[in-house]
Structures are given as structure tokens and as C-alpha cells.
Length: 164
Image (tube, rainbow, N blue to C red; front, side, top):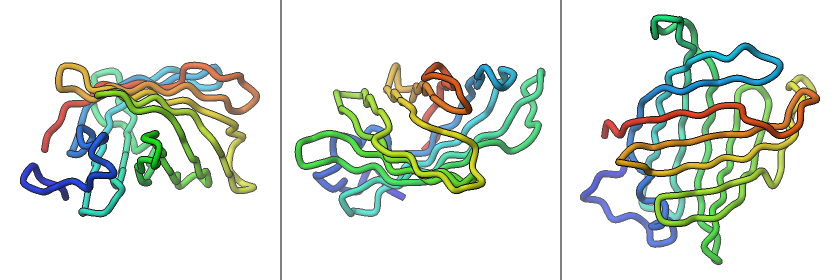
């Protein structure tokens, strides 16, 4: 994993603030599901090449904040295009592949899906937007989603603290 002593590849220097291990909690909801609290761990690492590796895992929490069961997982890569925009390529074990594209500002990334591919067994999923920001040393994010016959609308958000 990338450490503060390592040199980040200049192509992804604009994303260096994402690197680390983050943990926290958030809320997920949608017209087709009951709103729930969840816990999350995100690990963003760098090995010297011109991309960042992304790993996210979540688990549902019960009413007292205790782990109830595993939930969503995703893995992928962040890249910066030659014109300075962000790409996020994600895979999900539910049979969905996503390509996000968007803008990078200091400590803020705004993305929307440029492509979604799903296996024949995956649920209907059509588009999404994501917003990531560094606020008071915390990773804050929000996601809107268009899926299962619903228009693009709020789906999940979380606040995470850097642990490493």
C-alpha cells in the first residue's frame, strides 16, 4: 500500500488525497428497499503506476449499530485522463460493471456513469452519479442511482475517517 513516504505517480497526483484506509458509516435507501444504516471500509492504494486501486466493502447494521450481515462490495481503479478528468472503473459481484467519468477539483470529485454493463442475471441498473469529497479530513460521498424502473435519485451516502 502507498505510504506517505512513497512518491505517487504524477498522473494521479490530483487523487492522492483518496489514498489510505477509510472506515465509517452511512445510510442506504431507495423506493424499492427499506432505508438502513451500513458500515463501510474503503481501501485506496497506489503501487507507483498511473492509477489507484479501489476496494470497498459494506455491511448492514442493526438498530444498535451492530454488524448484521455483509452487503455491497466493489473493486476497481481510478485513473486521470490526459485532460485532467477522472475515470472510475468498478466491478461488483452482482454482475455489474460500471465506468464513471467526471471532474476533479481540489478535494472533490464529481462523476456520472459513462457506461453500465450487466450480466443477464443482474438486477436492472441503468445509471448513477457519485460525489466524493474531503471535508474536515473525512471522506464524504453520496450516490444517486437509476435502477429497477426508478429514475435517478438518492441511494446512499457515508462519512468515513482515515485510519491509515
